[in-house]
Image (cartoon, rainbow, N blue to C red; front, side, top):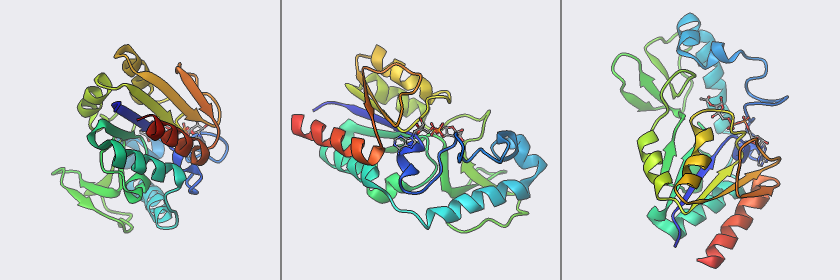
Length: 222
Ligand code: OAD
């Protein structure tokens, strides 16, 4: 059985109805990243930032995991601890599909963090817009990603690395394919169009088709 590390980006949730970040209908369109995704933006205008994340959080209640999320949960059920999922997504669709071995490296929309104490609270409601004691438990630009030590360990042991639905524009996730490759892994990309990064194989097409196909191929081989 191979050790598999899967990295997902917002493209895997697109067919569930969530916007990706970049592109014409992307989440950042209409917002300056520095206003809604930096500590400075939050300090300057917490109302705008809470409103932005409240809207995203509400949207989670309207969408469901798709065939790609379910296929990855099925792969984990077959491989157990030999499969690790690293997601840049702050939605909860992998968790709702049944994946459990997850590093949510950019945090989670359904968690809020006390700014003074660091206490985390599970939170599926709107945060009061004027609140300045609690903030979304998401990684903003200029902040440390979560769980990088675990990811580094998993990448060092990987036989297969699969990146799904990510443009590969954001550090450090855009380094993972090269790190896995250097450690001896085969690298595969699934995307609507190839990203700029180098992979051994590129599977072009929607995640809901390509991910189940890849998972079926892996399960047949193992
Ligand atoms: P992007 O919006 O940068 O990229 C989305 C990728 O998904 C693109 O490469 C699309 O081609 C691909 N895609 C779209 N629909 C797809 C589909 N149905 N099937 C397969 N692929 C599809 O989003 P991310 O790469 O996730 O970070 O962005 C990375 C990080 O940048 C985010 O986590 C966020 C953002 O700034 C933070 O907020 C810290």
